[in-house]
Image (cartoon, rainbow, N blue to C red; front, side, top):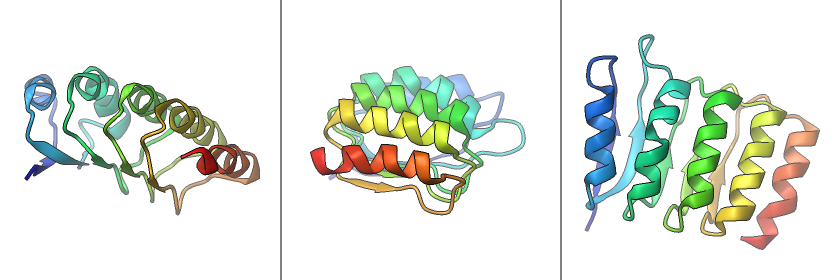
Length: 138
């Protein structure tokens, strides 16, 4: 069985944590916990390549980490490349309609995501429609 990884980067250990995460083949769940020094957007930028290399991660949780459309663009790219991530929780963040469009694009490309939580964000009707259009495909 796989392990859970709670990823709490600092400016000093961010690169090392990212390298370790990309190389591990046992982590099934990644829970990102950010702080004032390393934002979720910054962490997603650095994690992009690690997500593409890791073939065991199934669940990504970036719940309540002030993720914006900037970080969502990076996560969206990673989801688009991954064929293994099935569960994504990006609830309770600062995601807007632009971020929702990145989510929709990622899901339509990935085809592996079967559970998506985007609740409690700033997504309005345009973003919700973009996501709703791709959900039936998965």
